[in-house]
Amino acid sequence: MTSPLSPEAAPVEVVPAEAVPAEAGFRLPRPDLDRLDEITAALAKTAAEYDRTGEFPHAAIQLLHDAGLLTATVGRKWGGPGVSFADLARILLALGRGDTSVALIATMTLVPHALESGRPWPEAVYRRILAESAQRPTLLNHARAEPDTGRGGGTLARRTATGWAITGRKRFVTGAEGLSYYLLWATTDEPVPSPAVFLVPGGSPGIEILPTWRQLGMRATVSHEVVFTDVEVGADELIRFDDLGRRAATGPGPEPDQEYANSVLLISAALYLGAARAAQDFVHHTGVTKVPVHLGRPIAAGERFRHAAGEIEVLLSTAEQLVFGVAARLDRGEVVSANEALAAKVAVIRNLTAAVETAVRLLGSAALSQDNPLERIFRDVQAAGVHAPQEDAALLGIGTARLNDYIRQFG
Image 1 (cartoon, rainbow, N blue to C red):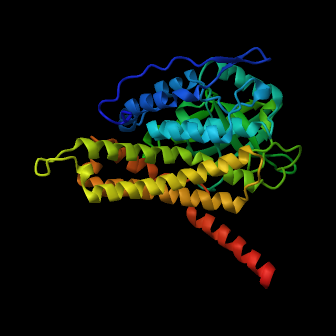
Image 2: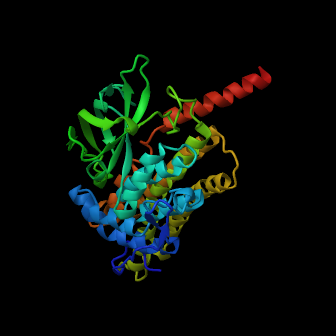
Image 3: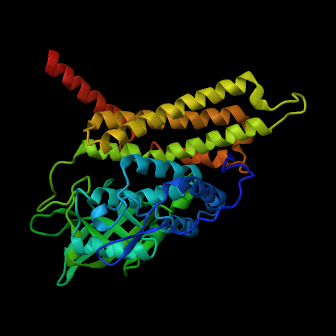
């Protein structure tokens, strides 16, 4: 099969997916997972240009909407396809293989829909979001991190006669320019202050997007800072959440279900695994098409090249087994421990970044040319380990838990 990153890749036309009727009157598109290769190829065609300009990838997001992928995780009770965790991993791997930035923007919408089935939002709010999602791309993302306070706490929601007025500043808001709704974390000014999430429409008065996203990679995610100044929302737009997005009846909610949370984080890492597979595609294409005059044969015929190709495959196939193995267990209803999922995430990210680094070393200086997709992929996968919990925190938590287990057993 022709690599989607190769010069020979032909243009593809993705037709709208079959629609799934919903009782509420809207129709959500059904994703055709047999066409994921087409989506990958289409995204790969525009990835370099979006990376160069740093512009929001509107056309690519429209493509995902038309293909039914942005609502693939909407539960069946809402008329959605409710894809399995294994299929979610397939989708994210395919998107990341085409354009890592687009894949991350999509992930930020797919995950809230996936979590909704077990942790429901107010019904009227969610129905409104789905009705809009049936008509056009409706992107969601949590806005929590803050420049001064880290994970949040500096954003205040002040009660008004009609609802709430929210003031604060958020950073690293992936997809900021294209979001239909911010899931905005704030602390209420109630007698007993409470952490909560507010559903804030992207075009609301009082929102200012600051063009601060000037990163090494993932440039088209436009993960800018966003300032909220007395942004007004209705009383029904409040959802009291705990750290996992579970709706709580009162107060901040129960302790986070870390088993479930870490498993979702692991599956989300599949988008970077897809990028690493794209790097592998380019290495293979280069190996079989580059024929130096002094060799008189493709460079892939050399032992050094084949050895490195084997190293890349071992790293990536092992990472895939971890991701899809955990996804399959979740789909069977098994419990994956928090530390088990977190350890797998650490290993997956280590493997995929090592695979891309091996690819760069193998191809040498040419790999770092902006004329090659490998240069962009190398920059993008540096972000894989940035998502919380980062490796140092993960190792600390895993090590502490194992030592405590030992002390309880033998101490």
